[in-house]
Length: 318
Ligand code: 13P
Ligand code: SF4
Image (cartoon, rainbow, N blue to C red):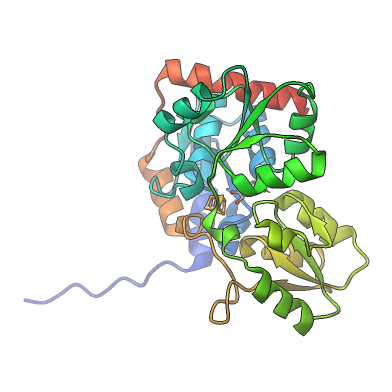
């Protein structure tokens, strides 16, 4: 039996071209998070943090939204756009932080604190959003918390590190859900301090999902977008970046002459990576646009319930 000659795999350039054609055919907009691989960011119409991408999803005139990020981000886009087709390259690219907070446990959490306002991080499922009063992202969390009267009790979930950071910064008591992001939780004081000693000219900057033992040494703490803006406007020439290293692509693009050092996870691992964000590949992007699936589908009742606290957030952070 003679076998067919193997077809060469398409190159990155061919795949990028194909994505461009499919976007035109579908009248699609491609939204990508800063933590995706560089070639996905290159293919995207909008690259942003979770708040910017939610805003882009809210405003787009496209018929189809292709979302390269993690599941809750695409789900948020669908909540805001019930009549649009929302596609994801990989439906199994979920956020483990979001997935660690089950609706049953969160319902119990609420019941244990009657009268409290429930503020939930956007890194949560539609079910958790539907059980919450208002949503926040790391970009607008301070503003959202400040908008709540000081005498009002607050419960906050699911990220305990972001919650703890806000409590300290705003001098505000909150009851925290004990979830965390494995990528940011992995940074330890010991290895970060080693990196600071090794690169004394570099400023340490960190995402508030990092532990307090890391945050306390940072020259600047902020959301992915805030970190990016800080590096672009700072006079410093080098930065140790304690967040997901996907953002280094855009940081380097904006400041080609500056040095960006990914914060070390431990001696063997120079960086702590979000595996789920990296599940978005150009091949899967082409496939999902060709097949028009996987698609985000949500029961309408759940969508309407989850929309309310998202809308409150967007109105407050307009
Ligand atoms: P941003 O809101 O900064 O985009 O963060 C999203 C996220 O998943 C952080 O780990
Ligand atoms: Fe979730 Fe952390 Fe990955 Fe962000 S970096 S998507 S919080 S697991």
